Image 1: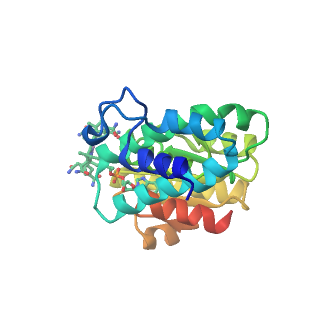
Image 2 (image 1 turned 60 degrees about the vertical axis):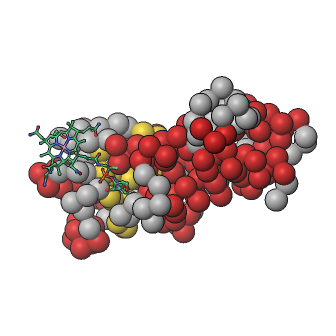
Length: 221
Ligand code: B1M
């Protein structure tokens, strides 16, 4: 791998956003994702190469370590912050159409449920995996999911639920999506959900963690 892209990969993997960031202590005072992205662009590396050879694989590595319990929520948040610092530099290339994402992923925590920590982790890994993210937040009704799908044709939808009492809400939202927009793929997740429940309610896939969520999206993209 190109040396600058290798450093950028490392900055994302270990959560070093920019030079001023004190985290992680071992990289204090050194350049971070922001500076390495600028250096890569200055060196003539294309935004596509930056995305595909450094950012996406680095977030993939972070997601894999998280699913294997080798890192935990705080490290994942720092990596996502580093990824964002890099993405800000690439934003103009997305805006100009030079860079395209793999597709759109609409995510929300279902109606009645306010838990968003897991949903946000999934969002970060999916966005880091090269997808456009539409985050509807928490307590999201079927109307809002349907509206978002109509505004983003072809998008894949992700529902998160953390309460046994909101699993019914998840079932209702899936049923409505499948009845009104049957071609829409629906991914479900959250602590009380499992593959049996996913199949019972007619969703397409259950992902127990963010990495398996992005693996599923990539498999159907
Ligand atoms: Co709540 N809460 N909570 N809570 N809370 C739980 C979930 C609970 C298990 C605690 C307990 O009793 N032991 C319990 C649910 C019991 C049940 O239903 N069986 C519970 C309860 C009862 C409640 C209230 C009803 C409490 C009350 O008011 N009486 C209330 C409900 C409010 C509401 O939603 N309407 C409530 C409120 C809250 C807080 C607001 C205080 C806070 C949420 C803050 C926030 O999210 N911004 C909170 C918290 C923090 C928790 C615990 C402690 C932690 C949840 C969490 O963030 N885990 C939780 C107990 C516990 O888990 N130890 C608890 C970390 C997170 C990374 O994991 O969300 O599972 P998780 O996400 C994972 C995977 O599930 C997966 O990826 C993530 C990373 O691996 N995943 C997906 C998640 N979504 C996915 C979507 C996908 C794919 C994968 O695709 C779309």
